[in-house]
Image (tube, rainbow, N blue to C red; front, side, top):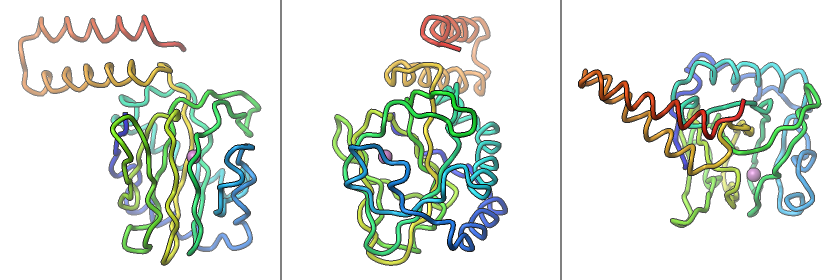
Length: 228
Ligand code: NI
């Protein structure tokens, strides 16, 4: 399930993050520092050094925003969230087709995290650069994603994906992974559909007992599939 989550960061948060990244200077390093064997050869971008004070500060701001975001919570069902990383694609940079590594070690606490969901939060506005689309492939073909600053896309980490070459300007983004309480994308999708229907029923003040039974189905599926 590929979901667009609008306005994860508000204008003030976005301006703060943008200002800090624009002044990061020497903190930008070669993006291959976090690439696995498979993806290192196709990765051409810059990143903030993992666990650097600046990456930690801005990452914490994003994590706090995600905790308040109902759409993120209902679509991803997060168990553990990897500390957000930050990348920059200047003119001529790109990231060829790859699948993200399945397990990562959280540099903050040394714990393993299974990457069920990949997330990209756009920090540059689309008009600031040409190219730089995130291309995500699934059984329905390739999807081109280029969102407003502050918006985020989440997609199954099992997907083949790439970032097209930037041909003008620079593309700033944050990216990270989530271990979900429900590892299977099809099960998460079903739970999200059910949850959305329940929310719509609640908004329409539909008959109470029907809603109660649907809520019961949701929690019983979570009990069956969820791991905490
Ligand atoms: Ni990737």
